[in-house]
Image 1 (cartoon, rainbow, N blue to C red):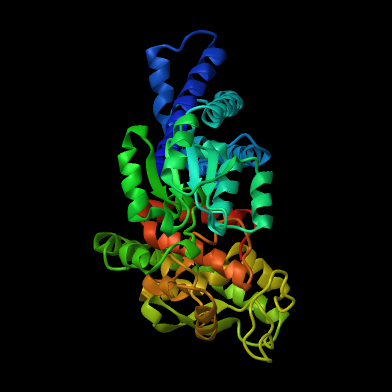
Image 2 (image 1 turned 180 degrees about the vertical axis):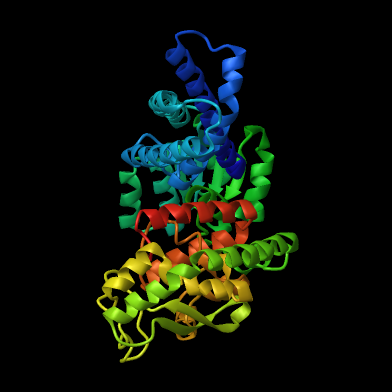
Length: 465
């Protein structure tokens, strides 16, 4: 239920946008020529505008308009839509100017942009209203944990995800008075129950459709047997990691164990995907190296002009299965950045030079790592490679941190496009690990393509790290 619901809503957004774009084209021709477009006129505009629609849909994806977390009616959504429309329209204008597909679309394109912006906004508002007020899965959380609290907050603030929390059931000793008070402030009804016989009437009265077991002991054989006896309630059961992953795009590290990693976080059970990915890495790295080679001398010279020392920075990093390799980047810090030993990078790091800050924001500092991708030490998409000395220290503090080495590190990744800067603190490192584990479990060519597209947005917005 959880994943299929999420996927269904995303596909609905995508399919609806396609319908709206063609509807906008229809109304454009209707207004432009003052009559319902003839079959000949429609066919004349259909193919070139279909190609343009691909540009718009890709731009929407880059802007994050198919992320359910920002698909609601909000300023973030409005800003993303404006950015996507402006970028796509500029590319569409270039397309029509370069290829000249037999029509004169200047006025048509202006009309189309205005009409499509209005229709898409109305369509998204209508859908979000429907998804946010109806068709919600009535959900009960059974048990308490910090991850369960984080999940409940996400679901409450994002009704477009499709879940309505109607009840929270726990034992009286599961959380402190302070935590209980936090739950009450969330306006979710709390109930203390010892057996399922106490819960069954609540499930019926609240019409609960989904039970989320927040802790393992709530999925005991006794509970499962009791739920089976009450199967006429037609209530589905899921565990916290499953719903948490669907809603947040992260894996709750504190709520999983060794069995989860044995099932999901191995690198050998997707051989066909790995073959395609390696082939793509070789082709893309070669093309990227050829395309960016003319920039290298200018970048190197700019670094040298601002500060003494080599324009390159070579450092040991930990790759797949713990293999250490040499990663090369354009230097972004001064030459004495680590005179007192290895140090964590920080936001607004004073060691970063002016040229280095520009290179980081545009990700140009990572161009030499294309060689690492070509050699096979790295991939385009994957967890960020960590330094050996930091890897050892973090593995001692963060549970399952070594498991991120199940696959090759990448130039960009699921964490890098999350929109937040994560420091070296234990809390932020745990956050990064949760994103990395989500990618390891769900990695696919489609997810890789989505990450690469959203990386483009990150670079263009100057949010590189």
